[in-house]
Image 1 (spheres, rainbow, N blue to C red):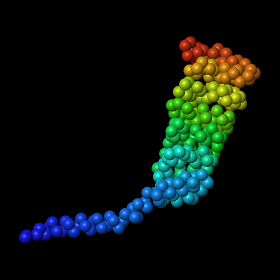
Image 2 (image 1 turned 30 degrees about the horizontal axis):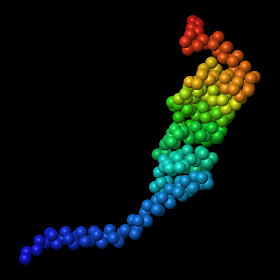
Image 3 (image 1 turned 90 degrees about the vertical axis):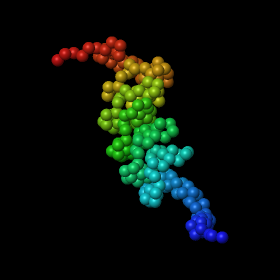
Image 4 (image 1 turned 180 degrees about the horizontal axis):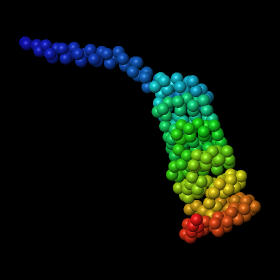
Length: 243
């Protein structure tokens, strides 16, 4: 009976492919665990602040924007772990997104501001970290942590002093709520509006009052009265004087 040479070749070719796949199966099966281990090693290097190991991992193909399911994005994790060498290694890669957010919408700059890591704040800003954005900002976080030097630096980089969180809380209010009078007074002296209230109806003075800090509350109400006299309110602003 006539045999089609093309058909015979195709059978041979399929058999060859099947044999190759079978031979490679053990090696292919080992790739996934190896890659998972590589990512674990990457985050472990960040935790121990091993910048050289972080850089080596990226050279071997680990994405600098990798995010662990529990630990979050690598850059944020480096700040949380107070690992400046690891963070510097991450920021050496132009592909690193310095404004990446975790599941809570927080950035590396926000964490550095909260912890008062001034040099890290400078590094992140120099790399392009956003000082201003909608919602909670690095200035809120610095005020919450009572980090006066970071507050000063952020204002020097044009942080919006009356930035409003999703519920209308300003950095001044959060400083008062967290009992940070030095920061609260500094913000007022730099032009923060002490007359504002958040969506819950709380002003900075109200937060101080709630904590029993009556002297701070009284000082804040005096500044609020002066502010209204000078600038009026949103509903009735004082007209600008003509030159």
